Length: 185
Image (cartoon, rainbow, N blue to C red; front, side, top):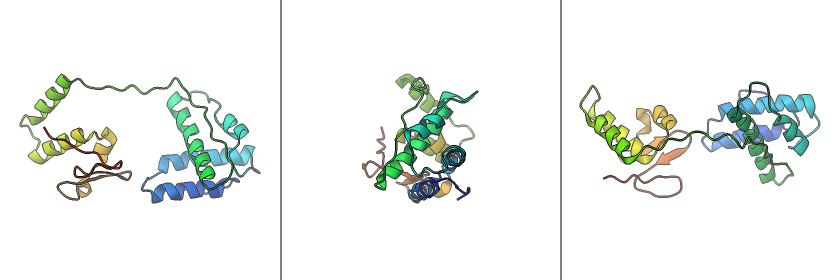
């Protein structure tokens, strides 16, 4: 662990981080937020060893110059911590103090825009053929830009299987909940 946790929730926080990392998640940004929550608990609730309503409500108070997305991330890690404590058979409050107004803007391209994008990707430029195949494969599998940017050659295990970081595998031969099936035109 990068941080030393000192509150009454320290053993729960450390257990959550260990579990997430054992599941294959890096959990670095969340660990940093949990350290801030731990410091908050040391200052305000040093005797408490579980998440309470009062604690979550005070933690969820908006801060100056804080955007909705960051506020939601702060609350989300406490919610996950509360769920982890509940999974251990202990009592904990699950906060629901999210900013309901925050909705990330999603853009879904039209069929014509997708066709144009793929047509332009087929134009012979400085791209080598392997890059074009990978671009089409990633796009067809519905990978996020983050997953595409994190992909490295060692992630290509075989011709049929790509291992994408954050414990997500995409295998065209399987259709379980952990895999996405790529259909080729």
